[in-house]
Length: 549
Ligand code: J2J
Image (cartoon, rainbow, N blue to C red; front, side, top):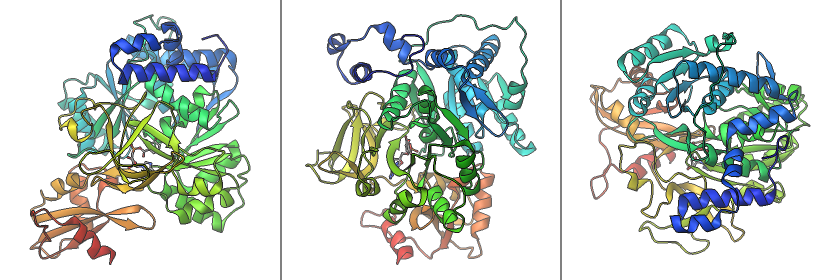
């Protein structure tokens, strides 16, 4: 990679995809013949440290990150990253060591993440909403060497302290405010260590699990950069782009699709939104001349409603608004271009890898109704029926996929992998989709039971298991019910002799059990007995129908 050049040529981008795809999805014999690139070039393109180093040289004074407290140039970003990386290294954190990270949106989130990448340490991306059950589960399973969190309140500190005390793997717990204040003398310098390769583990993203412990998604430096880059190219991002990070940055969508990482790799500016209210979103768009923002349908809905009351903020800098993470009703999609005077771009993405996206050139009707095409020419998509047989063109069924940046196994999964991957290495998305003649994916719903509440994914079994621990609950079933604001709300049906049990009591009970707030039921229904199917499974379809009637 030549110093000072930021963007890859089309040929280079194609070659990278081919290299990654062949590494992952082809037999060894075939791989050699495909390598058009020298190994050296591949390694330097697919490495965050090297890419940011280049940007710091070519555009040291351009603003990379803006948050409530500071504006950081590319030059400063590189310098501070290296300093923090040197500090971590000096503290004994090495390549391959894991760091459980739980932080609110801030510039520090990005600095800490990039500093860990620099030394090959692996952040585990806990969401701010994760509570004791999830944090503890992840710490037990992944055995991080350190934890890095915001200060939080005294209750939060007590919880983290307890997890820290009870888990031998964790040697140190850092508070981000202290890391920000670090003033290091000349004696702490980054030592040259083992090279960070494209196929080294970069981070563990988290996805909903069946037991309360999130599944851990191992993403490599190479596959993640390629994923960022593929999306960034289809959106024609460049150094003049300004991305507003609204969703929690530990989530794949704002982090890498193309999100803040894609924006930084293109040399643009990342603006950090902390509170994700329409008020903050619109004023940041005006103040920072934001060119694109990504949101889930529930936040889009709030923004559209707000805009109807107050349309005074100047949104003319926006090129497009990306929406994904959950089904977007067409009544909403059709309003976006008009209300924001920019293009709606739908994205259907997964933290496991595959991302499909509308093109900026797609006609309005297309952008309002389909979720787009895979972002890499090497993505392989297939639709299967209930028996696992491949469906015909245009037919609906479950989407399975493999490709250059899609995982083929979870990290340390105790559950059985076969429900998530086929024996030919395809990831089973669990989504019911159809693919149109142009190759656009249209998401129709879930093939799996998972509930999608405002973009957060919840497995009913997880809520059920915890509810059953309540002494008054004899039987329970948790279902997702259509909701105008949330997409789906969580409804818990219980059979109980105690007719006085209330929703708020159930929520408090689950909170005490340490469950994340987004997993708590929105509605509680007490019923005399559960409806059962012929094979004696709880008939969840009937339960949903009872509410939707
Ligand atoms: C319907 N359902 C969708 C869409 C994702 C970009 C955007 C979102 C995510 C994400 C992501 C959907 N319409 N447009 O990682 O890179 C549901 C599907 C999918 C699941 C993945 C990205 N876009 N979904 O939401 O790993 O059910 O990633 O399988 O959290 O969200 O969830 P997650």
